[in-house]
Amino acid sequence: MHGGHEHDYSNGGGGSLAPGIGHNRSGEPRRPAQWQTPHREDAPTGEEGRPRPETDLDLVEAAFVEGFLGASDTTSFLRLARVPFERTAVDGAKLLLLRVEVDSVADVGSITPHLGGATFRYDPLPARMVSHRKRLRLVYFDGQGTRVLGLAETMSLVVP
Image (cartoon, rainbow, N blue to C red; front, side, top):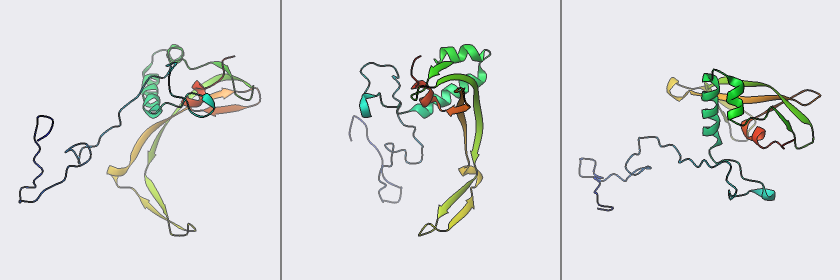
């Protein structure tokens, strides 16, 4: 007994089962805890004193895609999300937002390299293992051509 409650670790046949990941929920998938405080002044810093990228930016990006696709006014949504329409890149180029691209991606196969890496094995994935996700890309014009940026790169652009 611990924490005011007990756990039955027996398997019914007199044996014992060890608790799994997630405290007795070995079969139940667990999502990582979120940490979302993107604009804190005292946020931990990474290399060169820059703020570290968000630990759960994939979840932030997924929420962005969901909201963007459902928005009745996409320009206003971009403003609310603080996506810059005009910014300066680290190399000094002026960037102008042209479009937001959202792709639907499904991973339906797996490649495993053989020992030594010269050859590989390909396996189609069974339906329950196919993964689906949406990919976000923000396309900017830099005066010469287009630059495709992710959400993290876009948010780290220099203010003009």
